[in-house]
Structures are given as structure tokens and as C-alpha cells.
Image (cartoon, helix red, strand yellow):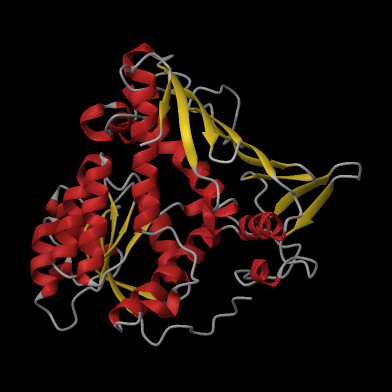
Length: 390
């Protein structure tokens, strides 16, 4: 259980690119990174408008001299300081992730990036190789994967309690963009513009979250081929989709589905993961993240609660308060950030083997998320046909 005791030797000097005034996700990053005192925000390039970014940084308590006009100036200046940043979080539109991440790695700075990591698998693999060559980490903020009951689901699968895995049923289908909200909302506008969002909207923005969680729960499943059909129900979003259905065949015979939508009218969030085995099933819903539904064939369904002694010990490690008290998104992100801090410390010490069993969404997760989107787009653009997974 997390009780505030330090588990790293030092605090990571940390900067941000993006995440400025009015950015919801920027606040989530800061709340998560600063919660356990493993990171210290000392610099930022928060806004395309340099004056506005400097003013925002000052409001956060930063030295105005370390609130930079752009990321290039920040990386150049900070990498020359003895007390310069060791890590940077990138909370900018998708089209900038590759360029900023590469510049940070070349400056010797660890990267924590919003997904998708890049537009193409080749770019993502390039960043992965660069990080490995420089002894740096890449973290990708699949923030929902820090919820404790994801670990319990993974332990149940690993123990054989579900039997042979047969079905992986995933969805992330909310209704908040069932109309063209981007006409009045700048934060939504770039997400439906291929110049900024890349080759997909909901596939890259939403679907990769439950996809990564399914990989955590069922790490041995490998996609053999998939079929994707995507639609633009708000016509002005074409060629980007606001709804998609993906079917996946796994090596070994398991089958998966992933419904992704921003036009599921009436749905608040709609992210659910259900893993079906030959003996039992588990289901997790992010609107009720402290519970995991465990259903054994022929027995009453069980609702497993976060923080309870009947859970696997590894499922209790990230609890911040006793059972019965709800934990949520900020705690989940904070669980990722302390793992990023542990990974940074191990790599800076030249001892990455110390964290070989540490689970966090790293460069490989970033690469695989981009690879999956590329395969989905390829299938959809061919008319919704089965394609071998490349």
C-alpha cells in the first residue's frame, strides 16, 4: 500500500511541453506526477504563445526564466544546466509527438508522451531504438492502466482461473461527440483534423486504451489478423472516423472485438474490458474502476473490490487508502508516474535490470499502439477486409 514513503532516492526534475492554461490533460499530468513527490516541475514550454505560457508557468510557481517560448529552447537551455530537467511530459497534439520526443531524447532527456507516440510504426520504432541507445526511457500515458483491479484481472488470467482464453471483448464508446462539437470547441477540433490527429480519430484516441489494458491482462495473446470497418457519422469528420468496429483473430484461436465510438449517444464513458475463458470471465468498467466482476460458470457472480485482503498481494500494492473509499483517475495516473520515476532512476544508474519486472506502458506499448492503428486503417481503407497483422 502506498503511504507516502519514498521509494526512489531522488526527485526527478521535470518539465512539460504543452498542457498550458485551459488544458484538462495538462492538469491530470501535473496532479499525477506531483502527488507522491517523485517529480518536481521546474520548467515548461506550455503554450504556443510565449507570453501566455510564461504567465501560466509563473502561476504554477515556476521561475519565469525557465518558462520557455518553445520546446527547442527549453531542451537546449535545460540540458546545459547542472540542475536541468531529467524528464519531460509531452501533452501536445498528435502531429508533434514524434518531433518533440526525438528532440528530447537527443538532448538526453527521458520522455513521457501522450498517445499515440507517433503517426507511423517506423517513427515509433526509431524513437524506441534511440531511447535504448541513449539509456533513456519512453513512457506512454495509457492512464487507465494504473487502476489496481487491472492487476487483479491479470493475476486471475495468469493463475488459470479463467481457463483457456477464448474471447476478448473491448469497447471505449462515449457519446459526447455525437454532434459536431468541434465547431465550437478548439480542444476537439484538432482531434478530427488529419493534419494534427493523424490517420485516425477514435481508433488512435480511444481504442488504444482498452487495447493496452487487454495486453496487460492477457500478455500472451498475439494478434494474427484483423478486420476494421470505420464510419464518419458526422460527415464533416471524414476521412477520420468517429465510430469503428474491429475484429481480431489471435494466434492460438482466441477472438477479439473492439468497438470504439465518440457518437454513442447517452453513454458517459463506456470503456469496458471483458475477458472470457473456458471456465470463467472477468469484466472491468472504468466508470466503476474499484470493482472487478468475476463470473465462474455455474456459480453466482462475484464483485471483487479494491483494497480487500482476498485479492492477490500485487493488486494491493498501489492502494492509497483502505477498502471502501473510492479511488479514481488521478490515482491511476499517479500509479503510472511513480513507475516512470522508478524506471528513470534505474536507467540513470545504468541498472535497467533492476526494473525488469516493473509494469508500465513504455516504448514497446507506444510502438504496438501505433502498429495496431496502422493495421486498422489499412483494413478499413481496403473496404473492411481481413488483413494479416504486420
